[in-house]
Length: 202
View 1 (cartoon, rainbow, N blue to C red):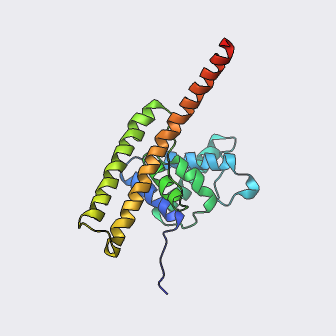
View 2: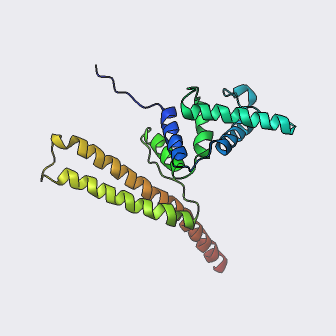
View 3: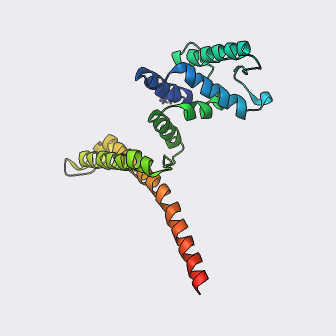
């Protein structure tokens, strides 16, 4: 029986984190503060598995907590510690800068077979992320399909190329779903407003 090794979720998260640090888009100290604050604020004390420290009531305790939490996160990023618990993932990923946050979430979501659609909450996000992302995924899907069809036939030898084309097609659908998720609520609101105006005029 052949073993197929699957990259653990924690390693996926840390891979994106390390790349963000490498590209100097993430500074560990403020990142650790954001993660620790969110974790401590949203996880009940009895449910916590991470040893983050509260800031306390004095400057001294706040500084000690900041240094402790920074060291904890830094050790995880550098691989010195491997205690990346599952309940940390949500707060950690949310604190990542873009595009690493979105890319990391997309990779994790795909593991469940879902479309990794990213929320686009403003016109600026549609223009800066949505449209370029859709164009990019369309191009990559067409390139992948061209590879499948290059020899004039589709057969078992195209297995790897077909898998790539299917994945690129899924990414394309996710990119469109992101834009669709921004457009549909606006359309629904417009329809509701039109129906209300029509009712008032009748």
